[in-house]
Image: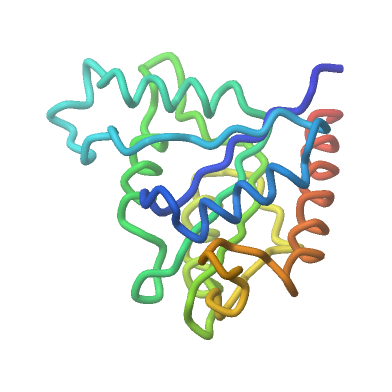
Length: 188
């Protein structure tokens, strides 16, 4: 069996965002048990049907990365009790049919969701909104365990980098569960 391919989609474009750091921590936990890549998508234009066909090259690239992945792991911050607009824009592009012969690329993909934020709610409200959207798009969501990490500032080291003191075991549990979840989907 080929190695499982996990594609991490971070809902923040900031290069040192807490959620990007969380995704990188997940990558370390996964180790060599799977191929784990972070999707780079800051070059995706705003969704606009006027430019949908021919498909912009950046959109073709991210669609191919999603198609070639066995599972999608979302890492999202919470902005005003919602997931960020850049993530919604990306999902809007991914939700569109590739052509009249090929459907959208998210359908049937296993999905996990994690998030960290400086606030008290973690990212629970944003994650609930994201689950609503990706469930509608027919992704296979692993609802348990999900990971919401509040009070990000309490989990930083002296250099301001994410250290995941109390939350590390929960991320580890979610990573293991997601690998098992994907394997079960592949075996079907």
